[in-house]
Length: 266
Ligand SMILES: [Zn+2]
Image (cartoon, rainbow, N blue to C red; front, side, top):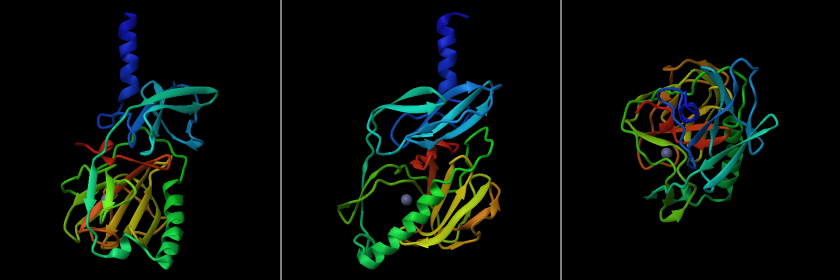
């Protein structure tokens, strides 16, 4: 094998492993970084002090790293043991999205509502940052409801023309009452009725890989429950800050929102 072939093979190892999962070096994407040989014990890796998902595939261990949406283009450093791995994050311009919300307090909450939002944020953040040790060999997901996927992940949002946080998930259009199923085996990390997200279920799939299902009409699971891929979590609704019934589907790695399309079959 020539050096060029070796380099090419290494590049392939770095960029793709499961058929459905490819790295995407943009804010809100993922990096897949080889961090060791399969015969060695599981290495650990971190980004910005947060543990990242590590999995074993074929001859290697890989870190699968969520790249925060607010990352500026340039280098990010993954730490693994005494080593540093540099990933180069490219620029990506997400589009703008302008939405009109009839319930004005959902755009400009009063103090009592802000207190509620602050309390809920702590519960949601804790669930999204769960890191549970479990052996994984892929990060694929199945679609939680059939329906048209929007490509609005990351879009810079304006509610009633006021700028707000970028869109942290994928919206899937479906009628109220359509069953929502778990995208992968996991444990229910939180359920609740939240000010912005409405009725919500958060599922912990292990090693910081977490999925979130929002705006449900009803939930069918409770915290601590084990679920298997395809098990019903609840039904599509229009609770929380919405313009109509749909599922907001969020996917998280190392506590950061990444584009759900990365993990789903096209
Ligand atoms: Zn959404």
